[in-house]
Image (tube, rainbow, N blue to C red; front, side):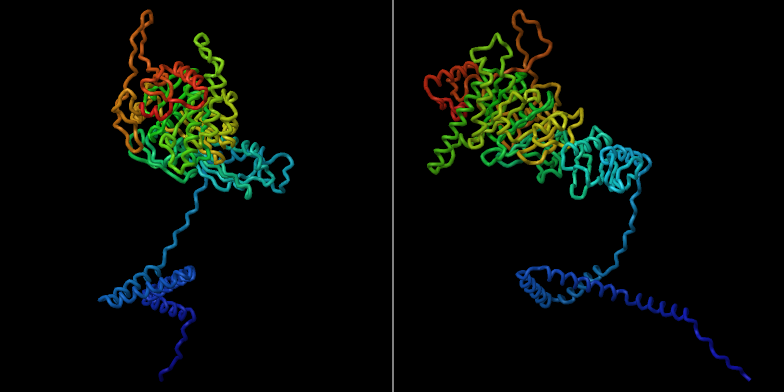
Length: 602
């Protein structure tokens, strides 16, 4: 007799495994459909979000365009099939499962970096945690945890390059002196030979420090691409300005876009005049040469007073567009007297033209640049035995700038004054009142730079900075780092050959060569070899010279504005003739000598 046994019931876990396996099989079979459904849902969500975000006036044209596209697809052969395939492809692309990128925790600082951060933390303790700290848990204590205050940091070449720290709320971050103390400590502990940018978040009690890259020094002066009335003072950091200009490098490595410091001059300018202050050898003369060459490229007139008398501007003497290069007190007096009368003449001519409803005359619209390098050096004669009757008129030299400074903006006259720090007290009040564009060059302390700029920069250029390195501020704008374009004296044999060739290629033609023409913006003549300084024949009784000297030119032969046959010799004689003619006329206005006749002569 066969015995029947009741079959055993399957366990619960076996049933679960079977259901799970069946579900996985169904999902594998239906995976394409799931991907397409997910993609269609995401496309519909995007379309609905666009529809809600779009304004009402754009919904109607969108529906009309969709209807036209649908009609075209319906009429085209295989249009419906192609549209369906495109829709399925878009749905499959948007419905795919994106692989999650594994998060890699940033590696912590090594032992050397931790030592630097702890040393910086201990250096900040005396400033952020004085005796009687009111905070219950003090942030800064000797032997405290630096990880609680240094929220973000970065290292470059083994030194701190970026740092974000928090400080107590009771710290007086609204006082510039307190901020400068903290900035000086951070700069000293992270590297003195670098420059930094500090951003104080007074609301969140945060301080961000960034080590700045050095500014480029291989950019020569050239016809920069700027608007009419704009001059390039130099170049600065990228985040500071919103504009770049293409420049050519000294190495010939092609073109490069760099952010410039642009100074707008002319009637629309709010800072029509410039004051440049620097240490000896810091590059103020190079800045004046750069501005002079840019003005000549724009077909402007340039009048130069070289108070130092070292021949820094001898390369510009007797050139088209250069009205004179004066190095003596009589010549400088004559030049500035003419500039004073020319400013008045331009104002009168512009007023008459506007009253008659006519365009401004061409000689009024043409800009006039008056560049003065160390004018206070001419206040007293350097050689008393050669001083004439005008030797006591030294202080009047700077008083003649009053009219060009006050009315130069409307007359198209731009005044640029360059002085060392030691002679700032000798400048008249009009220069500081009207020259609201300021430049400070050289490795000076932030306090000294702030006295000139009106706002203290965060850090100064480190020792050993190249010439032309400093700061610039236009009016009430921010203080910008500045690197002046390389503009050496082409007769200076110690300068680089490439920079001398760049300056020589921009020099206008000589007035003794009628066929020569000044350089025009956008056209740079072929770089000619820089000629050596011509040797002068030895005079009787004079010892022979081992090296030739650069030619010294004291302006063109004659006064300002005279015709070719009416020029009266050097600056001293021209100035005396101008004063005699003024006394004969009994007036102050310009006589026959005007800038228009000077332009005819050149």
